[in-house]
Amino acid sequence: MKKLVLLFLFSVLAVAGMTAQKASAQVERGAESLYIRPHVGISYYMGDNEKSPFNFDGDMFDKLPYNVGAEIGYQFSPTYSLGLAFRTGDYTQITDFEVQTSTKDHPTTRSAIQLIARKLLSEGKIAPYWMAGLNVGWGETYVFSTTCANNGACATKSDNTAFGATVGFGLDFYISPSTSFFVQTMLDAQTPDGNPDGSVNDGFGVDWLGAHTLGLKLNLKRVNAVELTDMVCPEQVVDAGSPVTFTASHNEGATAPVMYMWTFGDGSTAEGMTATHTFNRAGDYTVGVRATNGNGKYESTMTCVVSVKDPCVPAAITSMRASNMSPDTQTAVTFSANVTGTDGEWRWDFGDGSTGTGASPTHTYAEAGTYTVTLEVENCAGVTRRTMTITVAPYEAAICREITEMNSAFFDRNSSAITAEGRAALQENLQILLECPNLNVRLEGWASPGERRPQELSEDRARAVEQFYVDGGVAASRMQTMGMGRSQQGSKKEGLAQFRRVDTIPVR
Picture 1 (cartoon, rainbow, N blue to C red):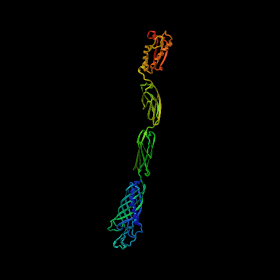
Picture 2: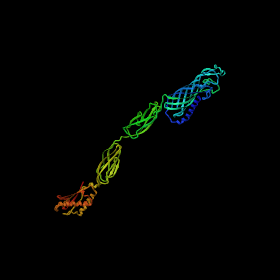
Picture 3: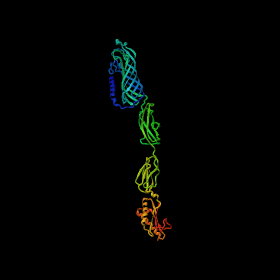
Picture 4: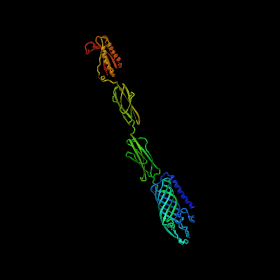
């Protein structure tokens, strides 16, 4: 029965070792912690009296070769540890069956203290490991003399101590960051030869005391390194002067307390899983968070970039103006406006089908008229509009601004027909009127003393000159005709002919 048990334990270790690589997903095993490893199992012995852990000589199946113990130590990392173990067990095979003796109650119990270093070969759910160290063992031993094998007096009882090296391997099965289940086999090589089993011959030269055990590993103080899992930052551009909230989170198994430190890229810092910060200036800021535990030994960091803009203020057009409110068709006009609020896009409509952009566009109107100019400003808050009116006059030459007197047309006595000389004089006036579309005139008709119907005659003469101008292309609306009647004053020139005339007087 015991042979089957031992074979089963070896089979479990072998099969589990072959499949351990398939369970390679890493898990959170405790690090830097005191631990305790209680275990229980089956003892086996290899030495002068027994050469195999599986073969048992003699009728010893009435006793179970138990083995119990515990190990306490320190885990330096998830894979390295160093411990001090105590083990005691009943090694039923340790009795020398080859020597016949009447001594029946042979002591088979041995104890040992071991200093053991252990290395896990992976951090998966099933982690194989090896171990090695030193041991000191003790227990009661019968020392037999082969010369008097049949005499019970030849068996001398002695408390013998032995020491040597310890080796072994096993499998660690993950349960939680602080708990695991293990199956292992361990073998102590002890010397001087004969102290463990009471037999000194030409055998191994050392005695081997081993145990197939299973047990639990319990971390007494586990420090599980912190790892940041998420960092929540604003995805949109934020306004300067407005508070912004940042949040971070870490792995659930991290050992508390976990400390958080935030840096905002502008010299400011904050603590806690959630932090609120206000950026005072526009720009791009690199925000970082650092989480630590284990008194600062373990840390994890994350960063994000936050874009900050000036806050959006609706645009308001407080005034509009033009560099010339009464330009002519050859004068360029520069438009401008006073606009408050966040900068935006300026769009101008000059009222004649032309458009412009920017804060001070320039435009020249091709035709005279009254135009409604519209300014539209669009910024982050929306669109605002405002209008103004500008009147454009036709272009005038310099003479149009300087002329103060025009030619008079003279008539024959009692006639309203324009003479050839009169037409020549009026032709010069007509050229000026055509060149100066902004210039209006008043036509004053006169009659000389002695002419018949002086009032009617003066009116007819004024209308005749008006018709001359109209025929030449001057709008009647630009002229005002007046019959002045008989002249009461003299002329600069002598003779009554100077009174028979029509004066063209510039009016602005």
